[in-house]
Image: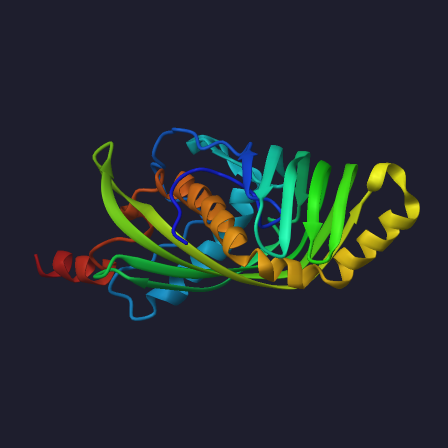
Length: 272
């Protein structure tokens, strides 16, 4: 599915459909000078994709803590106020919400590849999250495959080996007299290696039923995630879309993606 602006976080809470994400997309000044962490990748470089992947690798640690000079908020850890659940068809049916959500580990990620087609205005990239640890409160009612699920209490979840593959449509627009990159649409696919989950106080504290449902969730977790793949992919897109636009909207392309190669500029100066 293709997504536009707006944040939710269903990829880390694999049962969620809609949410309110507290990462803030803020207006801010353009970056005036190229810092050491921002690599320059010339558009005519035959290895442009490799250069851009190296650039993203350098940028991620800065994004994690935030870049205050251009009003880019950090995302380690991620905080969510509330995520609503509403799915009433298929093997997984749920209603309710998660609240007071904290996600640790998104900064521990690795860009795996980057490809860009400037003529067609398309960019693709991959990001691997080795581990994501989630804590929240939950209030849920529904059915997970063959078992009922009713409860409210604490939720603990660990996701392992989340590998994302992202395709985007891009454009170059003017802002404050400078060209910046903007991502208009995004499509995200993903795979996940493992999921562990524990929901406390299921069935009003019935320990036997709680143990049974938690065991089932852990045994069939990847199957449940697969059932919700389209929704989770949409939410991943929304997250990546806001984070990347919040950054690139403030990075003039002449600092990191110059249209004319510096080699040509140097040759022009020598011959003038």
